[in-house]
Every structure is written in C-alpha cells, then in structure tokens.
Image (cartoon, rainbow, N blue to C red; front, side, top):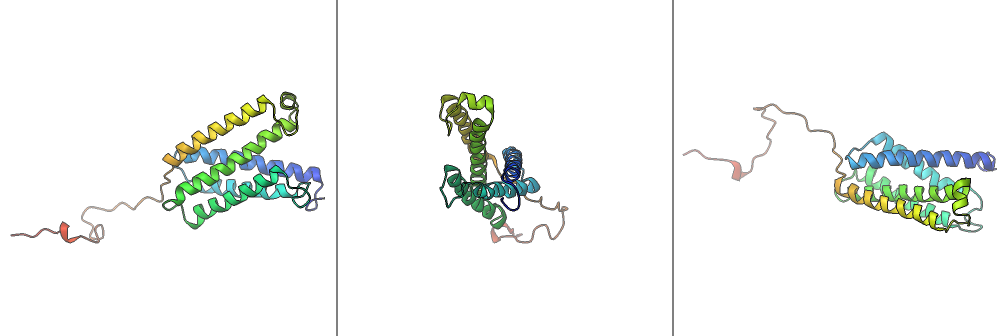
Length: 193
C-alpha cells in the first residue's frame, strides 16, 4: 500500500499525473515559442511535473533501499523545477531569470519525456520487441532517444532566443494629457530667445 492505495492504483495515478505534466508541458513549450505566458497551463505543468517527480520516489524500490537512475533523474528534475518556479514566480521572469526559467522548465520537460520513452520501450510490447534488454540499449531505443534530444536542444535554443513574454500593456494616453510626460531632462527643454 502506498498512501492508502494499492501499488497498481498508485502506479496508474502516477502515470496519469506524468502524462498530464507532459501534455501541458508541450503546450507551454509551444506557447513559449510565441512568447505567450499562459499562466494557468504553466502552473499546471509545473505542479504536475513536481508531483510526478516526487511521487516516483514512492514507487518501490524505495530510494533508501537501492537508488535507481530514475531516482537521480527525479532529484535533478526537482532541483530544476525549484529553480524554474523561483524564476517564474519569485523573480517574475525579470532580466536573466527569463532564460533561466525557460531553460530549467524545458529541461524538466525533456527529462519527463526521456523517462516516457524508456517506460514505453519497457511496457509497450511492440517497442519492447525492438529493444528487449532492461534497461533498453538496442539501436531503435538509442535512435528514438537521440531524436528526442536533438529536437529538444533545437527547441530550447529557439525558445531562449524568442521567449519574451509581454506583461500587461501600458494604458493608452491621450495627446495633451499632462500626466503623459512626467519628467523631462534638461537636454529636452528648449529656451526661447
């Protein structure tokens, strides 16, 4: 029993949370390509990715019995997600925190998809037949992981160059409005002769 659920029920819940994190993460990633913030989906992506990384530690074997590579990925993902949340919500994407957020959030998404590919080759019979070793190590598995990695590197580079989320627009001011121009430097003032 894990949190009052059978192992099968908890594993199913973990899979649903993971898939939700991946789907919302992909939507957020494509939103970043268009410099859209998407606050609701971003919060959902970050929350579900944190949940999937944290809940992975509860699936046997426990971390204290024998650490697995999946536990190391989970730890790395949680560290990256903590940085992403701080950059997004604490620093509000100001300055350098914009690209730190984009990088850490997208690498966390990549790690989730990396694990999804591994689990797919272990659990889906047709894929498992292509790479029957545990963990998978055959060429079809390596090709899929390589393609996913190359795609993510390319998208991350594009996002880091393009992601410039626009905050709320400035209010429109009427011409002749005395509050429209609050300060004038001495260089801007002209004197009449």
